[in-house]
Image (tube, rainbow, N blue to C red; front, side, top):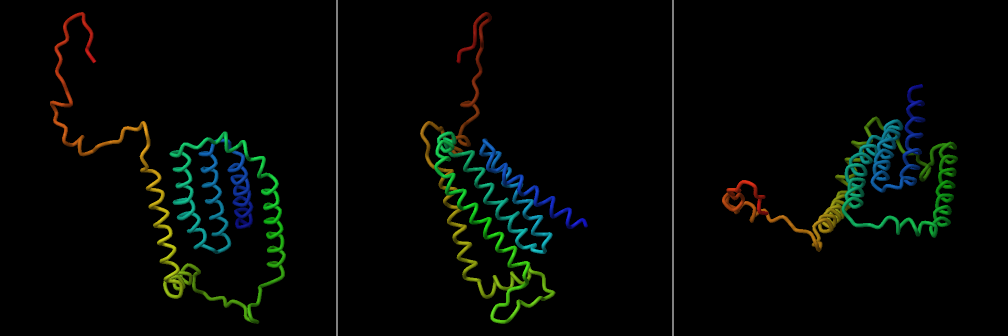
Length: 202
């Protein structure tokens, strides 16, 4: 009974947070709602026994992708009013895509209710080994080179994010740490004898 209650709770929170991600006017709030949706989706994955996918949702999507979205939204000078002005052009393509995804979900649920799919007259074996251990053996044996290539792609993406944040901007005075460390105390402070009745010279 508690599993059913947890499922409907997580599902309702995922739908609510997904709707708030789209409906929020503040882009920072949208990213925070997206993070909340990922956490609840991870809870759903734990309920169905897919601990690896739940861990990926929390570590990769919440810890990396959503935080990167948040940094991009907060650091880049984006005119969101201009972006919202052109949303009406994408209503019909968005609705078409939503209907197509809903149809795929309906077909998937109906196919799942029929029974397991036999691949070449064989059904996937059910083993007592945890799915995280089984996926780890495949990643570091059969798919090792593909796994390393994915790591290189992520490395390139990380370098690109660093380059974006450290680009040269006009009107911004950068920090010179070497110059600050080389500054002597007599250059930083000045003793002034202020006469009575007069102000301080700036």
